[in-house]
Length: 209
Length: 209
Image (cartoon, rainbow over all chains, first blue to last red; front, top):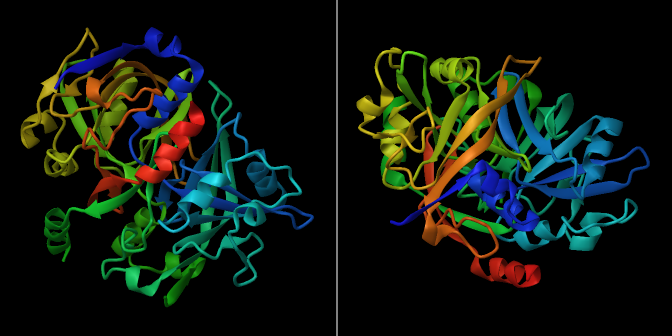
């Protein structure tokens, strides 16, 4: 297989859009989520993020990366205002609508309306879930870290409510996110279904018993 | 579809291993990488991470999460010592060996030897790449952030060298990581191949021209 190398200078000198596509592909497959928020005037907001990441199990912590140049500054503003947000897995049936939330809408336009996704309120949790998402969870804002080098912010939440299809919960505690039709993202705009490697998984499940 | 809900207390009260499997599944699909390091005595180290994340394109920044309870404390120690590390995509041919690096080896045992993966040194970069990996990159350590709430550390590097198959570089700058057979991880031990959604991708590529 013929390989190609890029140095630090060559990356710096790439055309802006190409560099963005290149760098966004380099980290590997990414989670595909819609983050739902609400402001103090009850305006709801929905935005796609591919940077949701596991940060701890006890306490149950999940974070996401908020870029300073993101089109969706409302997500972070709303979280600071109301201290809560939801994360909703993107599945095969809604990924086109999910992608469309990255268009630039004014604050008084709900991305739910614009993309025909349905806000859903559960168990008195203030921020909206996405009805069409199969695996979703509500978080309380806990902590933020600003990267010195580029102003990017890691936003951290504690999971306070999880909703998932009963059939996707496995006996060892894992969630079968493939069965729930959750998809993966690569780069800026590639969406991927997945196919589990059953041999290796079985070997591990046996080992764990 | 019948759903099941978990509250914050129910998550806290789960048995430790089940909670870990549950929480590790909840964030969605994760990148699958081997991180290669070297210490000042030229001992090489290799460890699997599912927390590699894109943090910026200019400068070219990628981070990973180092858990305080990780079996592989050597990775972080070595990065602090030598200021560099490599990230190597895990592909279909090496995921079993990659998983095996998470076993607990003493510092003088190389996980390369133990798992029969091959260290590869390129262009005077000090840390070892994985020969069997198709997409790989070298990073210079830049910054770290410790989460107040659980001691987890976000380690940030600047990409200084990228190696990939020439055939996987697309005209818009993106890398076709699926063509390179890069896999995705869910939970603690599920490995997944992917299948791109071609209709949506094409629509976007056309829009970008």
